Image (cartoon, rainbow, N blue to C red; front, side, top):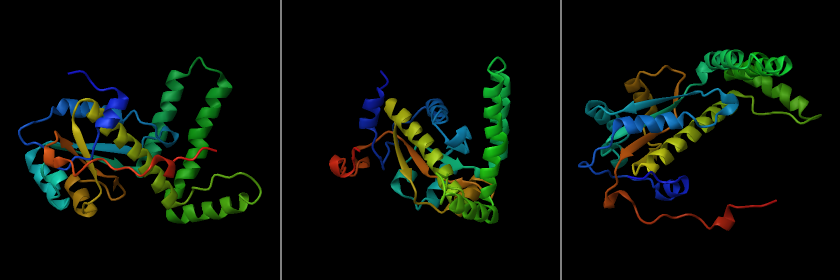
Length: 239
C-alpha cells in the first residue's frame, strides 16, 4: 500500500475511539512511527521526552482500567504514551555537548565555543529553574530586566513544564501523522489517573505523562460524527 503524503495523512487522521479487533497492526511499524516522533523539534534540542510502547494484552488491560475503560483505550490494539522528562535536562545537555564536539571538529572555533557556551552556561542556568525557589528568583530577576530591555520571561518552574509538554506534544503529533500515513488510526487521550498510570509504567516521581495514544484500525463506530472545525477566519490572523 502506498504511504499517504503529509497532506493526505493530515486529512485522514481523526481521533478514532473504537478499533477493529479483527485488524491487528504491526508493532514494528508503530515503533517506526515512534522513531519519526523523535525527529520532532524540541526546545533547545533537549528532547526531554520518552515514549512507552505498550503491546502486551495484560498491560493494555491494566492501562485501559486507569483510563476509565474509555473505548479508545479499551479497544486499542496498542498504546503509545509520550512522557515528559524535565528531570533529564543535565543528561540531555551532555548529549548535545558531546555531539557538538564530535561532529564540529573542522568548524570555526568561535562558532563551536558559542554553541558550547549555550549548552554549558545559558541552558543550565535556565533549567535550574525547575527547582521552584530558583525559578521564583529567576522570575523576579527577569521582571526587573524586562523593564529595560527585551527579556525571555518563561523561567519559572511552571513555565518550563509548559515548554516540556509543548515539545512532547509536537513529537506526539509527528507520531500520529506518521501512523495516519500508514493507514493506522490513533486517539490522544487526557482522561487517565496519572498517579496509577505512572505506577504501572514504573516512572520516576518527576516524570509527567503528556497523553495516552490509542492505536488501531478504525471501525465505523469509531468516528463520532463528521469532522468539525470552527471557521478558519476565526482562528487565522495576518498582520
